[in-house]
Image (cartoon, rainbow, N blue to C red; front, side):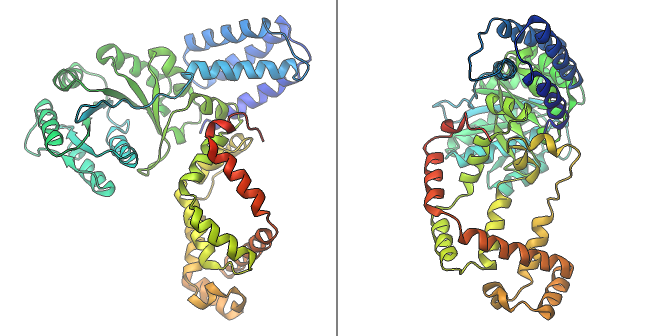
Length: 450
């Protein structure tokens, strides 16, 4: 995510951090480089101009305190202005006491509306809601079927009428169905086009008039850069939507849309899509995104992801096993599965301070977990519980059974033994203290730096 932008900004910021004092000349020189980087990232021209104007005004008006250098102060101002540009604070999805609350999903064809509708339904389900999906894309042949398949995967019902081509009528009937069946959120997936046309706009406008939705979320492919911003403005002029969803952000190396879009339409980015899986959705946090863009990572997001998968009872059992030196390959396999649940390794690593920019042109092999699991599952129960019995003959059989090499098996066993040694020497009381601090509030980690 944003690898190109991170790499180029990092080069510029290194020069800025080296400045001994703030003068109009070195501020101008620094911001000239920043301007070039932002233009390369496809950030809107007016947005760049206003952004740099604000940074310059704040930089020249600041007094430098003894504890930081002038260069560090300029970087902090850039970070603060970037946060302000993208919305200052996260915006939650709006739901009312009405049953059902209606969320209308709009955007161009290919932007990921249908997949996002299912992702949002799953997200709301984890928050204790009972969503209903409505298939109102009556033009794309596979749209209704796609939504039904996705709905089945997340165990959320899908309302559709296969014979009808009247999207407004379907949406009204879906509303009544949700009301009668105690579904408290109705998510309406609408039709898109390859380009904006009046018929599409009129249809979603009629649905808006008929149902008066609490939210109208505009879904846009972030990888289209400046085109995404232009499309967002056109849709906003027609529909006055309430929020923006940026999809395919995991593949966006530039970041122009993420930086520009909120400033151009003055509506918050509410969600981002960071992968194909149905749990690959995040709320948009401007402060965390600014930190990632500037190569400082997102340690709060990382901790939150870890906490979602962190099982306190399992951790206590593992601690006892570590202390008694009873940790085996069954436990190792359990840990691998928890890491996999956190999502894409590329995305997880990009959250760590200083790592994101180093992932440029690096292909993180997501299949490594599959190979490790295959090796462990090719072991017998005795071998997993007692790794010391793994002689050469057994290792050869495991390699053949898992479709890997003896070298792969040896490497895994070596890593396993090293992990056991490390865990044996770990101070668990100190670790519990750290986790307790982290559980107080993610806000307490905002100023954490590595």
